[in-house]
Length: 283
Image 1 (cartoon, rainbow, N blue to C red):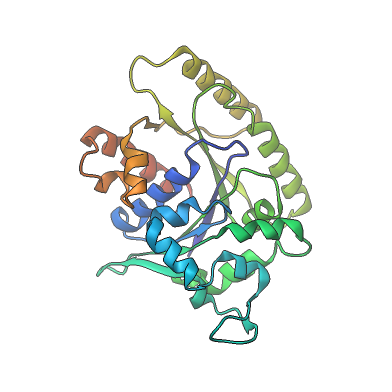
Image 2 (image 1 turned 180 degrees about the vertical axis):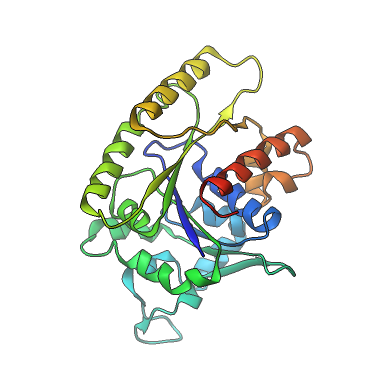
């Protein structure tokens, strides 16, 4: 049975996309799962991490479908078609990797034009879960990388998900997006009482391993207390700061396949990822 999880924080710059990239890779490569990553952020950083900047540009220049078409339910006329064509799920899913043990890693890419969806959001939130329902039987885990905003894209992610997970970087104003997220989740649950949407937990990343700055220590305490007030679990496992995360992501490699990443950094992330998969029932 497939499980869908949205990674979200209303505050940007928290390492959400880097975490989504590495979790998807771990689930496919290490846990032997069939994984679909969905880029729901108009900035499309997850798409670029997976495909590489040059291949991503080539993908767009070839007029291939993205998550934008999911919200439009058709592909606009192209040079080779001449008229709108119905959405074919296979055209939207970009196959990244497949292994002999049947584990695989696929991607629904995004593009900047996804922001247009925010201009005319009426009755579109159901289209993402409708799309995923058609392909979910092909996957064990679907990971949605959400934009740091409250919008129709957020609602679409909620409606598609069984769990949400919240990456947090312990720093000044780390809690600023959490009250908005709490209100957003509460309002959604009130309006969709037939859906089970649970908080998988808060995942700290970017924490200094030693000589932790006072602002990080205070941030850890503030976030933990706020999480407790909402009944949200906090992962004991932490993805500590390492320059290998952004460096590996830019090269298309997860932390555990980055040659120059230290073994203890890889081990720390493996514990985070394993706990994450256990928490959402994927393993």
